[in-house]
Amino acid sequence: MQKQKPVSMSVIRRLPRYHRFLTELAKSGVTRISSKELSERMGFTASQVRQDFNCFGGFGQQGYGYNVPQLCTAIEEILGLQKQYPCILIGAGNLGKAIAGHMPFEQLGFQLIGVFDNSPKVVGQKIGGQEIRPYDSVGAFYEEHRPSMAILCVPRENVEEITDHLYGLGLRSFWNFGHYDIVLKHPDTIVENVHMNDSLMTLCYKLAATERP
Image 1 (cartoon, rainbow, N blue to C red):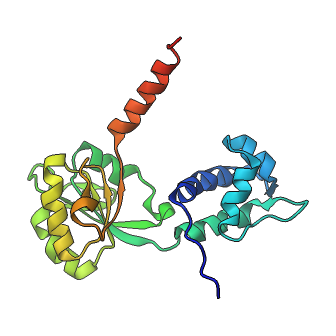
Image 2 (cartoon, rainbow, N blue to C red):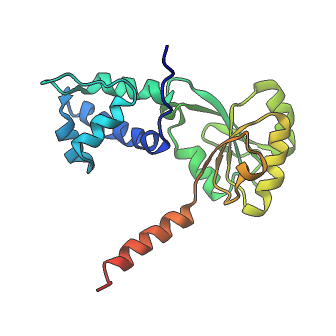
């Protein structure tokens, strides 16, 4: 059997956007859509849409297009959204509280099972249905519950130490808001870095570009 070619991350990163648009279409009662119509809504070319879906075998029918609910389900399966991976959140400051309180984890493939912080001011409070635990209890919690992923909402200067500790416990997957490159020290980890500063600077560039002659 011929080995399937790996799918590029550029395609993978477009899948959540496809899923979001298709979910909205399904909620509005749309049951089928052509690659041309989908591309116009998303700002891609129809060829790009077809190429992206062909990476996974293709889902359309000639002369019919795509079945919207079925395509939504297929993308959910590709992304693994039904897995419900258990995760913990480290750092219950403003950012951590916002993420724990407002992220729809269950819809995105995860289940938040623990929140940790080292500040006595917040330990014992509840966010996202979870009581904030002292960080020094994270080791025992990991041994009992075996979370698959940690969300890091801590200052950059603390990320390395905390990552080393969690890595030592056995965690290998991180959603990192700490502006520290975990993979350089731990190349066997799975990391998604979120750099809000970078995003805002990119927006600044786009605004500045409109003012250039």
